[in-house]
Amino acid sequence: MNCLLFGFMIYVNFIDKGHQHKLIYSTYGNIKETDLITGEVADLLTNLQSVIHSIDYDYQYEYVYFTRFERNDILRFRYPAERPYISETVSIADKPVGVAVDSFNSDVYLTEYGTGKLYRCASDGSNKILILQDDPLYALTLDTSNRWMYYSTYTTSGKIRKSRLNGTEKQTIVNSSHRIYGLSIDAIRGRLFWMEYSSGDLKSSNFNGENEIKVVSTNAASTNIGIHVYGSNVYCATGTTIINVTTTSTMIKNIIYSDPERIFSVIVYKETCKYIKDYVFTGNFMSDC
Image (cartoon, rainbow, N blue to C red):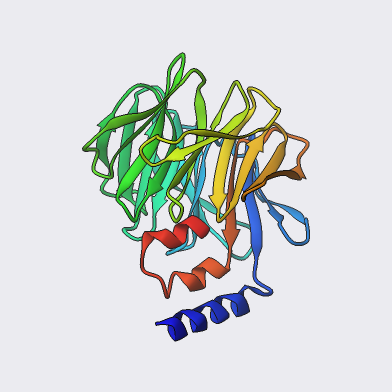
């Protein structure tokens, strides 16, 4: 067993060299990427005519999914691919804000802000079904290995709730005095991360909402939306910057990118993960991808 693990780690380290390491993020009407190694910035899609509150990636079929709030739809485009990138409609939705991909089951989950409805459909948009309905919904993230989803409700205050992927066992796990616009999980360490919109605080708890801690303040109130956990790094979209918070024994906060426009959502893309998924058939690999 140790020999197999050692061999696997050597393989991962080997293929990681020279592969793509990108941040994919949205501003109003645009989806962009910045290379984590070179710092090079490029437009992927432009003139989308909407706020894009949420982005997620399907490592199985290699698509970026995103919401268009004002245009009432969910779109996707193949990534990486030859330029120009071409988007296609996956589903129509009423003011969609959250989107999350279950790559292992080829499912896409989405939240509608005004109706409070949470839907699931196939990766191509077919077989769309209502999973649950709640207060106005915002952020959404999945724990595919344990079959839970986590979402925030949008009222005068904020709540984080969890349910099974079929909508059962719904329960409130976090009550906050601030609205919560960004959610992500670290499946390996069993931690949930979120940003409080008006306070600017990045917080964390276990999957039941217990052991809640303030990780760090972004020092940018009422601009915090997108968040993505990659290993021990939490990438936060706050105003016109993306901050990397390293959640080691000593919290380290660095601004790694600044844009002329406000940033709404962010995810990490690492080409290595396409190879890891061929060897690890559990949901946990997504926590590092």
